[in-house]
Image: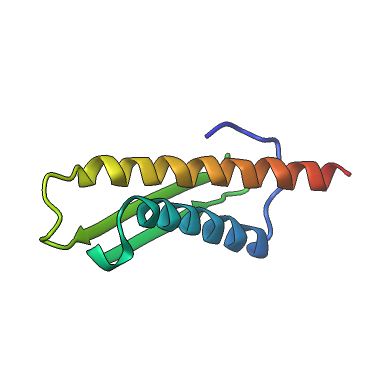
Length: 102
């Protein structure tokens, strides 16, 4: 993720960033697989924000599909969901930067 030149984020902004990224990954998975065919879905989003250092965002997606679903590339779907979470997080940070500059 690129640097945005944002001032230090508040705890509320970090929470919003995490929620936004998590929801994006969840929606991506559930848009590709029927929800009733997803047995477990765990999405973890973590933000490391140390003063004077760039923000670090970590997204992990783990899920188990119903045995009914065969020949499905679950790893590719997880990777795509992570990419979607990063894209949405980047959009959130860009919008936040625009709001803060006004």
